[in-house]
Image (cartoon, rainbow, N blue to C red; front, side, top):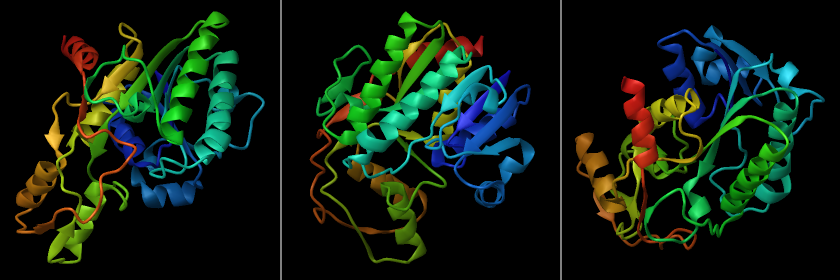
Length: 287
């Protein structure tokens, strides 16, 4: 199968490529905004696959042929994260992504997997299932949710399979420094005496990026279960426990400066994902 992966040099994209390279059997085409030279410096695995440098804001008449007629698209590209509440998600990212995906479908793409976000659920607490109404409160969540709805309407005119993956809280190697995981890595690297954080009572659904890459790949390569699918652990964990376990696992006795930061207003206090759909896909993949 010929698989096109956008956002290939990003945090999750790198791990998906490494996961799909491992067993072989697929022809991978990777793309991101970086030149090939810069992409290889960021992510050496690019040397082993077909790489096409492309800014998706620069439109093509036929993206499908430009990217060599892929059988399947895994679309991760999205600029400006983690600035969740900036208008450019609506003004720039939404129209560029909609044009790209619509153009791919109009010109022949039959199978598409797109990364959404748990922020589409808005401020709803508790276990979040895919059939719940979406109520985003950030421009990022609204842009993703609107993109999903627009693509669903394309089914009225075109035949294609779509998997929309609402990813929760991936963490791990190569994560941006602004992330919680990146800040904890920095605290260790800089031998800080304490780690500044919120009170840490929030419940979140954390998933290692290696698991996320595996799950996204398995979702993309099947069509028994389509539509919206949560990519999550299904297990709520407090932010404080997540931080304590991280430092303990590294053998570091780090003092936590609890309450240094307020809780984000764009996130509910306690939420996690229902992973029943995901579990069915993973179990079916074992057969």
